[in-house]
Amino acid sequence: PVTPNALKRLFDAGQKKLPDPLKLQFVVVAACHSESTGQAFVDAGIPHVLCCEKDSKLMNEAAVKFSRHLYQSLASGRTLSESFELAKETVRLDWSLQNPEAEVEKYVLLPKNGNHDVKIFFPRQVTSSASSRPSKSRLFPQLYLPPFHGDLSGRGKDIFKVLQKLSPLGKLIKIRGEIGSGVRSIAKAVARYVSIREHSFSIDEVIWFPFWQQPKPRSNNTFLCALKGMSEFLKSGFAGLNKSTEYEYDRLWTDACECLNGKKVLFVIDPKELPHGDSLCTFLSDVFRRLGKNYVTVLLVCEDGFDSSVDMKCAEAEPTVVSLDFNSAGLGAPRLL
Image (cartoon, rainbow, N blue to C red):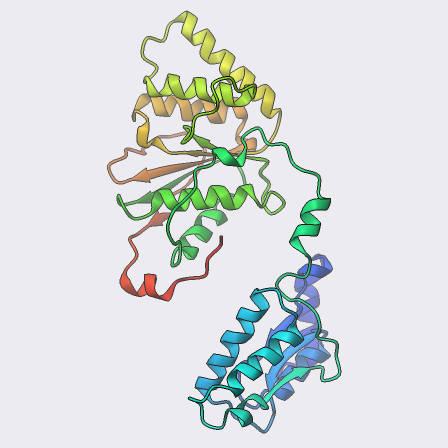
């Protein structure tokens, strides 16, 4: 059997470099007769453990309802002790269960005399931390990231699959999928997810190109003006490019690079309104060459019918999105946003 000391060594090895707020705080032993196992976790240093009395057997239906109410309460920001009592009372009042009073008394929160008046999912108030954090000035404001509409339930795994590919930088990530499979919605969700979690990713700016919403005509944001000019060049397929217009194109890139000045960038490109072929390849090549492969990753939306056979001589990844079937949509995988 695994001893408490062995468990403690395991937790210490896995968490020694983590700050205290990120260390394991709460363990649920979802099994009958699990009090001794729960005590082993306590002895290993876990501050909060939920288990079942050692002489008791849980009824499945009651256990499911208890767990649902417990997690919903925790997710709403209540403390562990509040959530524990609320889940017990909710099950106790459920007339569809046999002997609900006896069922709720089987649950034990360890250590029995411990202080469980703590929040598990949201240990800090978002409002206070956000107000104390200096505001971050963005070259590409979030309002220029496209919103996504509809429910992303069932897409958590697809979004996570793309997020995993973002590190390290220097990649061309092609999200593939059939038309209508949700490729574009997943790209939008990834862009917004990364943009509001700058401390979780080594990325300073998230750029959606071309604009889904044009900047104001008299915008004094040099970076946005440069991107707008580049999109016009690209939409024209670089038609009529001569020495004069080539100079203008280079100037736009110079302005953009000076603004970024070594920032790390996620460049999301939606080629729906762009000409495919050589012009897009030229632009992608410029993105990596001018910004530097160590400072940029490109996320390219590739719906069926789009020729994505571009060779940027860099690492590539091709996560594939498929249309949701009834079971996947019904199960509703956890949402990331």
